[in-house]
Amino acid sequence: MRTGAAAGHIGCFHEAICYDTDEHLLGVVVPFLVDGVAAGEPTVVALGEHNAALVRAALPAGSPVIYLTGDDLYARPASAIRTYRGLLAEHVSAGAGQIRIIGELAPQAFGATWDWWARYESAINHAYDEFPLWSMCAYDLRTTPAPVVDDVLRTHPRTALPGDVHRPNQGYLEPATYLVQPRRPVTDPVELTPPRCELTDPTPAEARHAVRAGVDGSLTEQERDDLVVAVSETVSNAHRHGHGPIRMRVWKTAGRVVVAVTDAGPGPTDPFAGLLPAPRGDGGGLGLWITHQACNHVSLYRRDDGFTVRLTAGTPP
Image (cartoon, rainbow, N blue to C red):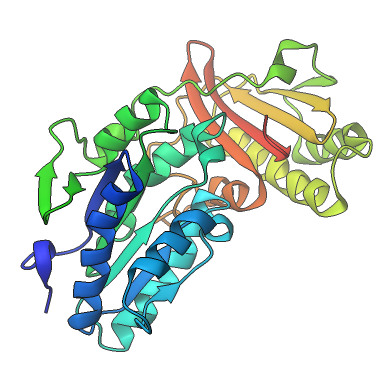
């Protein structure tokens, strides 16, 4: 049985908290968690160190709240979805009628990698909809850029406010609409320099060799091996599902390697490509899901010259 504002709702009840003071945040979060505990619902906090400490201090002593390390959990969107789906499935199997979660992204997510975190916030409306989840996502208006806030209001169906107020977001877009809108990612500064190498219609083996030869100590061995797998999958996808010519470019700077693979096709039709395993059995989309597990940033975008997958290994700018 579901309780609170989510009573009677089927699936994921997804809200944003756009707060401008610590008191504002606590005014929403503390009642949300206390009521969840009182209802016997699994109640989870996945906040950064500062806000987790605020919440812990504001809750009654000994509250049986589950604390997750937010910075580790939100390392990559696809892995966060995979981890959360496993956690939700465990609670449902144990008999939970509702699970409450309050989480937040690290401020670093609001920079060059925001495009894939915006896709995450939209996609989870679908990815978690088979579970009785009531989730709140906290965004500090003192530090969150205005364009990010705009995306937050378009990817969360409602906003939670102190006093048990829950307002629909008029600009909210369903994932199938939001995720197919053109989103040009932030240009990596290294892309403004000549590529270290450029290949036309490479085979997956040639692509793997080019990456191994072009890393030159910029990455750890694990980062290099993960990027090699991701590039191989991306080039294979371009041959299998795209249209030629296929263009691959590699850039390198200290601590980071960027690879862009462009083909003349329209790109995947699945709006959740990369964030969820492909629902169909022809292999389409599985490669993108693998790349989202392997790289520290993946951007998908369409321009007049075709569809591009940009892979970043190492520390994003």
